Image (cartoon, rainbow, N blue to C red; front, side, top):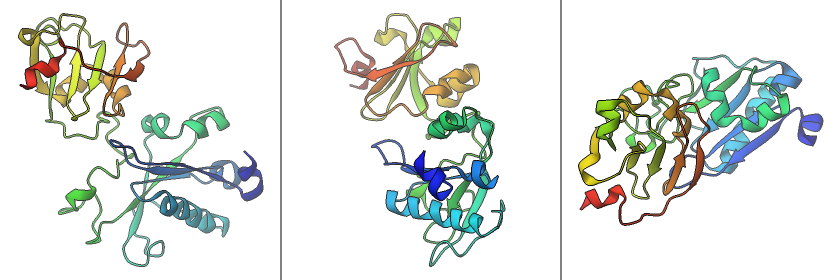
Length: 243
């Protein structure tokens, strides 16, 4: 990319959707300065881009960003910290970087900002309003969904009793999740379980944690590639059970 050659890095920025937070990340810090790439979530695109460039300026001046220490110079008020990105989370956010480097073998740090009371997401009384705007990439690689682990989701009695595989997942426009087997999806077949229970039994459902509102994903078997598309209800879908 031309920006990497000219400036030492490029910044990829993605707007928030109805379900997922905005984020921006660097490409080139590792190649140019042998410094971990940087990613940040949950602020305006303009602010995210500026923060990534501010960090790049620090690196250009010969400094190495340290993890788990407070930085007070990126905001007029409020702290920031950096945490290491678990490599199992790289593929979810650094796709363009992986294409350019032709590998996922590079380090990355997450820029984490404090709330209006200067608390970080892992600290007590962090503002609930911001709870889902910063997924923490140093953890949660075994459970990638934004929702709480005890969230009630729909599945089938065949998944529970017979261990049949989940081959279709629907993320309703109203936020409900459906994890379905190949069986008839009648009201009699539908059961409610905690989201964590599904992930613990089949970690591959983590691959569609970022399914948007109103989307579905289908596959032929566990380990098969998920095919995503828009979802439209028909008269036989589980939403009949919402009545």
